[in-house]
Amino acid sequence: MAPVKKDEILHDHNHDGIDRRGFLRCMAWAGTGALCVLEGGVLKSYALGHAGEMGGKISKGELTFMQISDSHMGFDKPANTDVIGTFKAAIDKINALPVAPEFILHTGDLTHLAAAEEFDALEQMLKDCRTKQVFYVPGEHDILNDNGAMYRDRFGRGTRGQGWFSFDQKGVHFVGLVNVQGVTEGGLGVLGGEQLDWLEKDLAPLSAETPLVVFAHVPLWMVYPKWGWGTDDGTKALALMKRFGSVTVLNGHIHQVMQKVEGNVAFHTARSTAFPQPAPGSAPSPGPMKVADDKLRSLLGIRNVTFKRGEQRLAVIDTPLQG
Amino acid sequence: MRTVLTAFVAGAALACVIAPSVAQKTAIPVTIDNFVFSPERLTVKVGTTVTWTNHDDIPHTVAAKERAFKSKVMDTDESFAFTFATPGEYTYFCSLHPHMTGTIVVEGTAGSGATQ
Image (cartoon, rainbow over all chains, first blue to last red; front, side, top):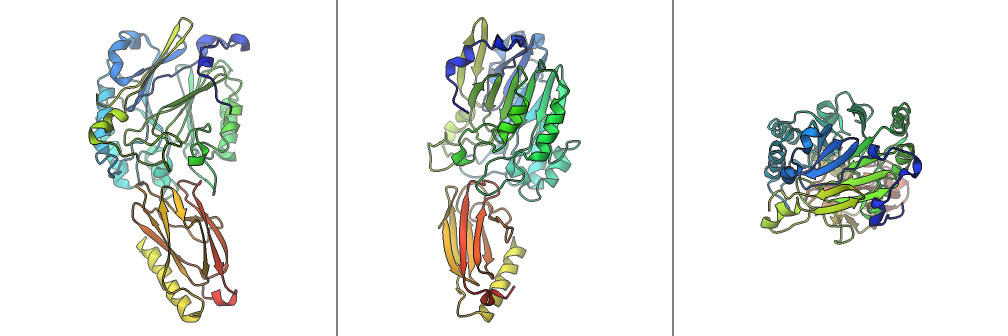
């Protein structure tokens, strides 16, 4: 996929005859998550710490939900010896919102080593979150001992295959995909034929005007293949979504915010609640990035980007856990 | 992990008894630093035990392409050992980070590796 210039996001895509108001955008990704508000068919995003800026918008919104990612329960290395504390900070941010989001998407790596007590910790902590409904997809860390059997038993009930599923909320079709199973040497994330067949059938009955939100752990687009940050057969999944006017892809895995818009597809990766990773190519390898203690929570959180598109203001305002 | 290690250590001992002239008696190390197996390509005699040790702050695994061996997850400073009783070329990767790959070349005659 060729890189898209920043200003292409400002272009109108009406040449395809698809109602612009159906185009989902979810533009704000904070270290702790982002709040997405579907307003009149347009998805806008706000960072958690900027709930006040939203004013009454949430209450008028048709749909609000959260994305959190890479909580890595059990991680205890110097990059963050208190992943419980930072995850709690994320929950506190959600609880402080003026209106409760309808549900949460957790885009994988719930745990660091897929241990039962790590899954327990996550489950216990989420009981303190006022938003009770959480949809999960697994990360590679969640399946490393048993090919994901425990994960699926506890967090993937009712899903298909290795844990993929879809659901509808207020006219938006959500698809959770698994791209951490069946990897092969030298490869990247993989969806596999069985899942792609299911996806094709799942999308078939939908009209092209249906907004799609697709979420998976590893980025579906080629962020940085050298570090494994991409999905080998991601383009096959995206080809199945080509006819849709509005596709928003939400991923985790790389522990940092990256965005890209290509045609009607907007790609976003979220930050971790546990530890940051280096920017692609900026270090010898990926992995937990050590920073000064007083810097950690700000790195897990802050980034502000604002796009203006015609009369629609698309704000990207990331929120630090602290600062 | 312990059970697996024990099994392979026992295998190594057996290999040494039957083919003492070709097997390395001490384990040959492969380290994992910054998501790289080092050495990336290693040649050993049949019957040699290879020990992988993870020095990263993130867990890794070692999984052979043809499923000849597969470690459990190795967290920081944990190791996995495997004894190569059959000559051949074994390519492997980390099942968590499949872009990480390595190769073990096991030299020797088929007969000298008939301990498995």
